[in-house]
Length: 191
Image (cartoon, rainbow, N blue to C red):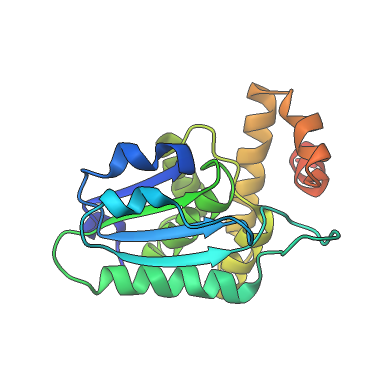
């Protein structure tokens, strides 16, 4: 899969789904909390292939949380391969609740799979340009880095993006720590 072969690739949150109904989306990757009902927005979309994953936006175990697992990232990558082999015009839309963490990690993984020769830094810069508020889930990225044989480079590029986001918005630090994402903050600040 090469991203140049995709007519479009979109990352968004639940509240933005209605904005994309007329954009010819052919493939949807939905990443939802385990207890979240399916979005009704897709009833107004044209025919499309959809894969739904259910896990929380978390990076460490905690009571009541369903973590993203390696199998989830393998499913994301299989989704990307299926989209690439579909032929014709392909518009991938990846969404999660807010369109910041799980969906951007998924899209970064798809980019990395599609372009194995492109540097992780360039791929994450492209993701950030597409979704300015991106904060990819580090747990998902670690699985993708390992599966795709990126030798830690994808992890490092995301750590650098987290550091950049913290420099731009220092108010993110207490918020992310409250959400159980302190390990991402600590890694970003160490760099």
